[in-house]
Image 1 (spheres, helix red, strand yellow):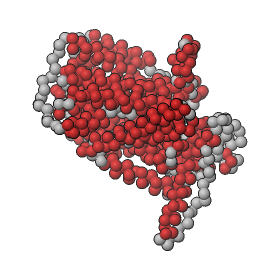
Image 2: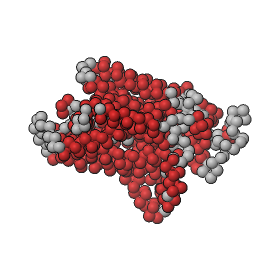
Image 3: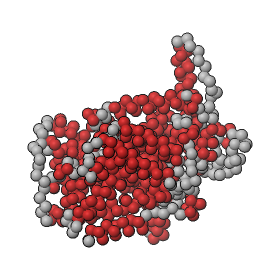
Amino acid sequence: MVSMVLLAVFVFIAFRLAPRERASDAHVHGAGQIGLLAAIALFGVDYFTSYYYATGEMMHVLHPYGLEKYAYLTAGVIALTNITFGGLYMYSLGPFHEGGGSYTASMRYLRPTVSLIVAVTLVEDYILTIVVSALSGGDQMLSILNLYGKNWIYHFALGALFATGTWFLTIRGRGESAKFVFILIGVFAFMTLTLGVGLVMAVQRGVPPAVAAEAPQAVTLGQALMHMLTASMKGMVALTGLEAVSNGVQFMIHEDAGIVRWGKRRLPRLRRLWDFYSGRPGIGRFVQTSFLFYGGLTTFFLAAFSLHFNVFDGTYGRTLVGNLAYIGFTQVPVGDLLFWAYQILAVLMLSAASMTALQDAQATEWRDVAIGEIPEFVVYRDKRGTFTRSVTITFIAAVLIMLLVRGQTTHAIPFYTIGVFLPITAMGLAIRRHILAHFTGRARRWGAAVAGFSAALSTVVFFGQIFGKWEEGGWIRIITFSVLFGGAHLLLLSPLGYRDPQQIYRIVREKARVQGGMASIVEWQSLKMQEYRYRLLVGISRLWAMFGVRRPVRYDPPVPAGDYDHALHVDDPLAPSLLAPYLAPTSAPEASVRR
C-alpha cells in the first residue's frame, strides 16, 4: 500500500509540474517555441537516461580484472570531462546566442571544411542515438519478460516500435512531447531519491554483498591502465545534449525563466548571475548546468553502492541499476512494486531518449539544406513549428540501421557517442579563437588556455572512444565517417548543392520560417559554403587541366558572404536580410523594410 501511494504521488506531482503549451505562447513567441521546463525535458532526456547504462558499462570493464576498486578514479575522469565540456558550452551561448552550436562556431572561426565535418558527424550521431536508445528500451522490456536474447526479431520489433512512438510524439509538436517526457523525468527523479534512501537503509541493516562468482583475471600494469582508460570511455555519459542545446536554442522562447525574474526582483545583488541565465541563452544554460555535475554525481553514487554490495551488470541476471533497485526498493513495504515500476520507467525513458536526437535533427537538417548538403525537398515546417520531413527521414534511417544490426544494441553501441566529441573539439578551438580576438590581458591568456584544454581533452576522448571500443567494431567508425564525409562533398559539388541568393532566402525565411539573428547566421553560412564549393570546383578544374582535360567551371563566382559580424548586424539587429540586395523586389517582402 505504501509503495502504491508513493508511486501515485510521484506521478501526480510530475503531472502537475509538467509544462503545457499555451496558445498565447505560440502567438507571442512562435509555434513550437519552448520554455525552461520543456527544454530540460526534450534536450536533457538522452543525458539523464545514461544513468541506466553508463556506470554499468564502466564497472563491467573493471570488474573481471579486479580493478573495480579504482572505479572512483575513472569516475573522477568522467566528472572532469563533464565539468570541462559543460562549462565550454555554457560560455559558448554568449557569442553564439542565436544557436548553431559548433556548426556556426567552426564556420565563423575555423574553416568551411570543419563545419561540413561537424554537420556530417552530428547527423550520423543523431541517427545512432535513436538506434541505441530504442534498442536499449527494447532490451529492458525483454529482460522483464525473460525473453532477452531469445530471438533477434523481438529486439528489432520492439526497437522499431519504440522509435515509432517517439516519432509520433515528435511530429505532434514540442508541447506534447515535452509534457510526456517531463512526467517521465519527474517520476524518475522522485524514485531515484527514494532508491537512495532505500540503499542507505540496506547498508544500515547489514544487507550482505553478493558472493563473487569467479576469481578476477590477472593483468599487467599496462593492461590495467588500458582497461581503466576503456572504462572511463565506456562510462562517459551521453554528451550529445551539450551540442543539442547549443543547436536547439533557436527553439527556445526569448524571455527570462520564472526563477530568473524572481531573482532579479528579490536578489538584485546577484545581478550578474541572473544576467548570465537571462533570455534564450539563459534557458539553454540552465539545461547545460546539469551537465556539469549530473554525470559525475550519478557515476559516483552508483559505483559506491555497486562496490559495497558487489553487484554489476549480469549479477543475478540483472543490470547494475536493476540490482541496486532491487536491493533499495525491497527495504520499503511492498517494494517489489516500486522495483518493477522503476524497470518499466527505464524502458520508457530509454525509448524517449531519442527525443533529443529528433529535436536536434530538426535544428540541424534545415540548415544543411540551406548550405547545399541536403536536397531542398527535406525542408517543411508545419503549423506547430515541427520540421516533419526531417523527423520522418531520420526515423526511417534509424529503423533501417536497427534492421542492419539485427536488433543487437551491442553492434550499434561502438558507433554511438564517438562522433559527438569531434564537434566539441571544433567548439573548443573556435572559442579559443574568439577569446584571442576579443579579450586582452589575463582574461585572454587564461580563457584561451582553458578553451585549448577543452579542445585537447575532447580530442583525447574522441580517440579514446575509438580505441576503447576497437575490438567491438569501433574501427568501422573511421570508415563510415570517411564515406559520409566524402559523400557530403560529392553532394555539395553536384548541381543539387548549388544555392543562389533567391533559393537561400526561400529555404530560410519562407520554408523554414526562420527570422532574426538565426536567419542571418544561416544565410551567411550558406554563402560561405557556396564560396567553398566554388573554390573546390575551380581546384578540380585546374587538376584536370594538368592532365590536358579542359573542364571550365559551369557557374559564376558566388555572392561574397562578407564578415560574420556584418552579416549578423551586431550593431543593428533590426537590419534587413544580407541577401536583400540580390533579390528581385517580388521575392523578398522584407528586403526593403526593417525587421
